[in-house]
Length: 416
Image: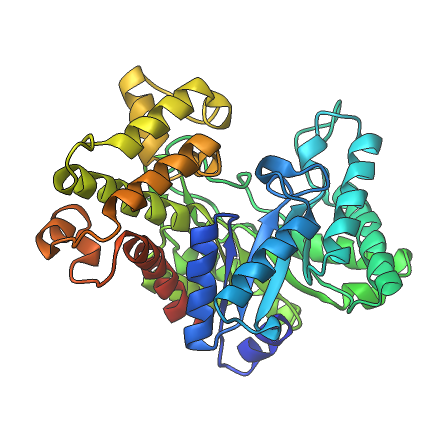
């Protein structure tokens, strides 16, 4: 499906695909269930920081993540051919505080593990500097390192008897995960910069004898002018990206991959697909919706269940995040009151890093157990989960439905 996106655009019938980047089992189940119901191809991605040979922050290697998603897909009734796994920002980023040689050795090992595990879409991103280097590298250095990663990917696929992967090149500004300050506008990547990125990569791939692999580069990551910070969202402005989009007329085999599309409207997402950004990355937006639902259910349980405190889940997460601030402390800024709000309600959704902590897993399990067999009145759903008013089912169903509302917007946009 990914290799048809450019042809669909050329034919005047652009279609897209949401790329769901998360390791949360509830979000993945909702994604897979929607794919089963609609028959649409499912694209799920893991980032270099989430999943790598050292476990990442999820504790999973690429092979672990493959098994995890395959199990969920089987339980949700998704056929193996209906799912593609991708690796996002694969490069030295997790080890960038080390020397470039050491970080790139780690990155090559990581790419080999991703490909060997059957990840069919590989984003080569060696744009970040390592110890003693500038924070961001130029296209020439980035491409040289990307080619060394691609060579490993090609060799690994060939030795394992696997189909060679498709590739994505380029990176977006600012870095993944959302900005940590208020943004009023974001300037799209210039046509000249995008053109140079493609040209340099093509040349370096050819010099390395990997022109055939470059022919499987399906997309370029650029900045279309969308972003979210802790408190606001910058919406897509099609006229501002018009010049950038001209590159796709020069490079008819390529499309753009849009990162940080979280919280965009259906109209904006649809415009992105129409304009040549058919791969729509979303991550914090879906876990934000899940957190909204869980906190709404927390309030509902406080009203319905005797002996339960009014905000037990929220209180557990506050205690956990203040005791272990590593995932948010450098991203949130302000007074203690502002920090408290951001810990729970920021669009950047740094709380997503905590849901797999044993304390959080146990708290969510207690919430669902408290509501098992309890009829939730529509009046309480309307009060605390108004977007789900009238939705049937128990607490788990409502949490899944909240995620599916976000996924539905992406499905509408992807349909073209």
